[in-house]
Length: 425
Ligand SMILES: Cc1cc2nc3c(=O)[nH]c(=O)nc-3n(C[C@H](O)[C@H](O)[C@H](O)COP(=O)(O)OP(=O)(O)OC[C@H]3O[C@@H](n4cnc5c(N)ncnc54)[C@H](O)[C@@H]3O)c2cc1C
Image 1 (cartoon, rainbow, N blue to C red):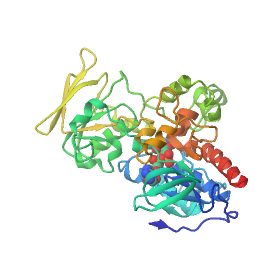
Image 2 (image 1 turned 90 degrees about the vertical axis):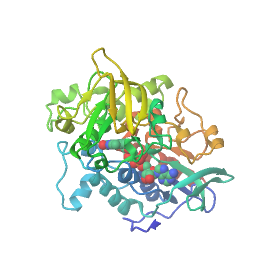
Image 3 (image 1 turned 180 degrees about the vertical axis):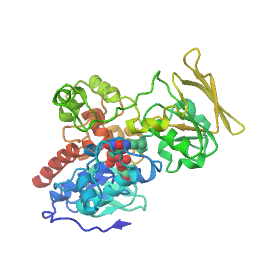
Image 4 (image 1 turned 135 degrees about the vertical axis):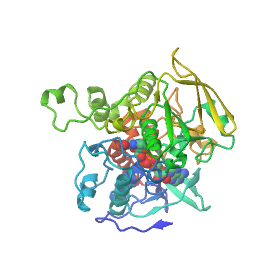
């Protein structure tokens, strides 16, 4: 299961950030896990990475999807200057992408594999099933039963374990939601063409709802999007060369233009010092649901979009789901579908991480009013040596940590801390 991959450059002699024979373990091999591992290896810290390289992008995204982020906001963080998406494209003789060229998920996945080859090296494609504290750090248990000693653990498991489906729909799938049940979450799918010919209720009003609806329609299904809010928001077509006055009025950032987003991206460390309620508000509100500018022509006027729709009841009769809806007076009142696709996002919740046993969960302090871990400026939780990155760190450092654009900030901070720890030992 271990992929042996040649590494670029020569890393300094390996140092252990903990007890003898104990490496730092990174759980997850997506953009965050790979970036942290690349920096740790370059700093000479002994590190082991578990997880499938770009696993979420291979198994939790429907074929045909594109990234919403722009090429400039889609670089993994490499310890050397030539690890950007543009470098990958150049090396393969492919044209550089601009803001006007949406990135297919397959391109991003291939970039992640290339990045692994060049900057990370060995990744063990195993699932971590459990994590427990040990006298000199942690013991990480793998799905093949192997216990792995770890001096420190970086959790970079992404959003997928935290997929959220509204509680009032869950009874529709007593065996659990999934592609074969009448109810699923967008993260359950790689191929939406299985619903060709069926009426599908897509719940949600963000990018994944709107893009799934486009893909369903294009595959011959009959999607209807049921949206809680009163409007559908779309991104605006980027302008490649904005005049100075425009750039000053609405500075660019990896998450879009405007002073608030620019500030959140430039100084994520200051978000951590805001009072918890303010931070959580930023986390929930900074980027509301919207569809990418390039998606609009595939959805608007093509797929029925029903706004002001709240599901009050749902029941299953003869294999069909009947949804009772509340909303505006003249709105849709009920809807019948063969399948319900919840494009209802993710909730940051460490209790949803299946490999954290109850004693460890209890020891991890939460940000008041949330189930997100409370983290230091180095991403360390209240369990010494246990770090959380990616979306799990977004309630601490702000919305940039939900996106690939946050990998550099996270990788530098975690590496600096762990490398210092290794030197002290
Ligand atoms: C539909 C969709 C579209 C998105 N589009 C964008 C976009 O355009 N731009 C952007 O910046 N962000 C986008 N995001 C957010 C995106 O998920 C993150 O930016 C990025 O993937 C986060 O990287 P990550 O490493 O934290 O998580 P992931 O990419 O989810 O990687 C998680 C890794 O952890 C592994 N893993 C999980 N559990 C275990 C376990 N128990 N043991 C071992 N390994 C485990 C997985 O196999 C995987 O390797 C999108 C998200 C979704 C759901």
